[in-house]
Every structure is written in C-alpha cells, then in structure tokens.
Length: 154
Image (tube, rainbow, N blue to C red; front, side, top):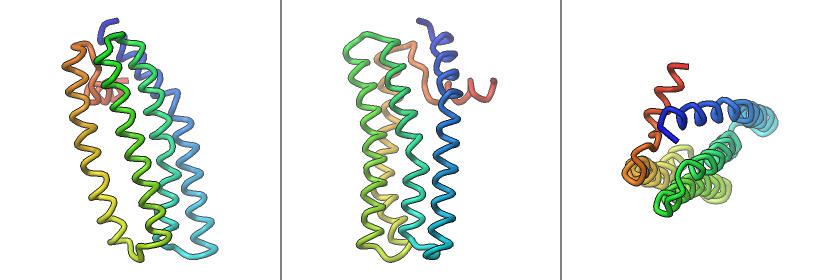
C-alpha cells in the first residue's frame, strides 16, 4: 500500500474517532463543572477532569496501532508500532499517577504541573523519536506531520 492510500485511510479513521473524542471532552468538562460547583475548584478536580478528557487519546492510539499494523507485515515495523502505542499508554498511566498524587499528596497546582512536566516530557521525546524510527523501518510510513498536513488539506 502506498503512502497516499495510507494517508486516506488514516484521515478517514481520525474523522470517525472525533465523535468519541468530543463526547469524552464534554463529559470531562461536565464533571469538572459539577464537582467545582459542589466542592469548589481543587487541584484534584482539575487533574481528574483532565484525565477523563484524555481517554480518547488512548482510544485513538489503539485504533492507530491496529491500522498501522495492517500496513506492513515486517516484524521490526510491528514491534515499533506496538512500542509507540505503549508510550501513549505510559503517558496516560502517568496522568493517572499524577491524579492519584494530587488526591493524596500534592497540595498545589504548581506542584502538580512540576510533576506532570517531569513525567510527561521524556515520554513526549520518546514518542517523537518513534515517528522517525517507524519511517526508517518503512519508507511508506505516514509521519504525524504528514497526517496533520493531510487533515488541514481536507
């Protein structure tokens, strides 16, 4: 399958997932507003609402992994695609840990942001480098930059 066919499939899949992403975003905002009215705005409220709004990221990453695995049967490419997904799972898990920490340990938003930045930035760097490794394993791989460009053109 060539790159253009892959781009079309990936853009179509992303459009399908937007409804679910919007739903979870609305749920997260609703939970934040309800809990804020009842208990006031706390660090835990913000962290938990943010965690709920990130659920679609995990769903979209899973769908992306399933789709990318259909593009190339090479074992190295398959391993790298799984690793990319695991990095996103680790990001989501770290957000869960940070939410837990805000509930029981941290008292301020500054502490939460500091811990989040320390935990998330290395994972983001790994995620960005994964795109390059996938491109090396498969020259027809659609990078995130190419996918964003295709979204803007649609």
